[in-house]
Length: 217
Image (cartoon, helix red, strand yellow):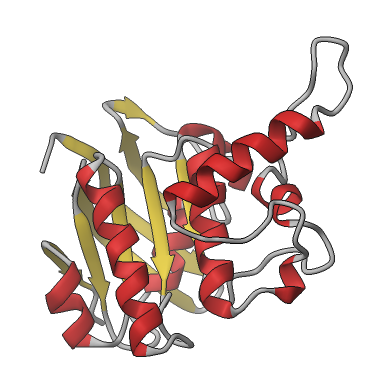
């Protein structure tokens, strides 16, 4: 594992009548698969939403790649190199794989027009990297849940993400599909990407993660 890539210090998030997080310290390193563990309601989702710019913390600070990080919205997180792949693999089902991979950061030519040729070619390269044999022009609604997760990873790679958050990624996958996903996770880890892995399946966590943090009370 490499140097520290993320330092969250004293993170608190209060809602009216609810203390969702209080004084959470959390850190990750480059090239690490780090498990985030806790019962339902322990604050895992809230911490992820703080890290991805959905929520602004009531207190605390975030340092990413050695610099203070202020997240006003999810686009700030994506621009910083933080990508999230959620349990439901949320995407635009009636758009193509390439359109989903480049959603939010469409490539343009020098004239300012959308460069679909470049986006399809880049998508093809990313699909090869995650070992997904589908066309960039395939509609996402035609893909399985496992294939959608791989498209989500391709989207993260298209944004040059340094930290990828996987929230219960295996909940709807078969054993074979989980093995295939873990193979890609290890490849990302070995290339220096930090992976935050959230799961209730402890056998999977023992297999894939090098470190863990537990949220409680």
